[in-house]
Image (cartoon, rainbow, N blue to C red):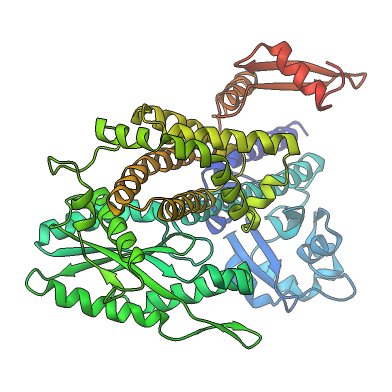
Length: 598
């Protein structure tokens, strides 16, 4: 008896060692197949288990082997084990149907195993246990343990095997969560670089792509064209047929324009009805002919009416301002500003222009300072120009902000955020927006001041659910409304072009810093979700302190508390970390009724 008892103790010791190492398997597995295979391997290494396998019924109710290790497991598929209607069958079937752990310490004595008895004897499957594996809260598979000895599955071994099945389910849930988080990060990265409405790359993608395209052109000795596109007569489409029809038109237009581009070219949507096209690999000797051909092909996108459904059709035009590398600029910002200015010149002459696009630098040249250098948006001449128009902007900023929020109301995602505000909060938000606009237009505002303010705003947007795509849409509407007000209010083209140029520069600094802060904030918030799990040797108290300290350092978090109920059900504070006094954190939690008594 003592020898048998010692053997049992040694067997249990080896099995519990395998159980402890199962945690490493669950943590380090890269995918489902790897996880299942490594678990089976681990549980047959130096244990009493002759074989371990995992099965799951398919749509035809036949058990499919997902992973297996051990003698005889290669022949499992040939047994054609099916889920019967009467609930009888091998242990793996019974475990699936009852969703509970079942075991048999002597296969020879089980009449339900008669059809498979020859297989069991040939491979020395004397006893077995099957336990369900749950994934996402529902039974997903069955884990089977097989021994070459009878009587192996005592109470301790049954408990151990059941626990392994539970751990496997948790490991699969953790694997699903990691995959879900990775997919969410991938989706967020895609959304950050693509326009939600049309699927085209957005301004952020443009800012990444254009400098690289310029470097390619510089290395190859080729030309590159940047085209700024604005639709003609698009507003009447929205006014007549509604914003949904306007969105449909933009989707159709994006598909048409994209179909006319070559592989190296890029079409992006900045927001509203504004697009940018990048044409690469233009030969220096024939650049104008190539540009004309490419833009003629692009214009076919608006030469046929757009079907808006229910028998309605709409027609729009396009205006494009172009700039060429290297002649019109050496970097992305200068080329975009040149193309933008050329587009507004062409837009202003829509009624008497010879063609729908222009490559005309005279707008900036006519409006440039006397020394011929590009206008510094923060320099003395820009300050003087803004000071000259101060009375106009101070008188019109309230009206501008009202127009801007009316435009934002057409976007459901943005309107949903606004609807969460109380009237007083919304009024305060509009007041802040007016103040921010005046801050941008103030002659004395320095570039670093704009960047610093924008970094804070970008972080706030990230923490309140404003996505990068929504941010870009808001900014382009901002720019469009400003431009429309200038064109209507300023009669001198040179003054208008200068204002467009310098305010575009300031807005670019503003939105660029906001987007960077938005991206940085989301990266910091998501980082803890993909951080490695604590080492098994780390004390639990240290794990808790490290985790809540990490949470307390996240943007937007003032404090983190951890509490647990005592024997009387009263929450007792166990840990607290924060950047504000803990009494203030607790008072805030009580105020919103997240806790009652600590």
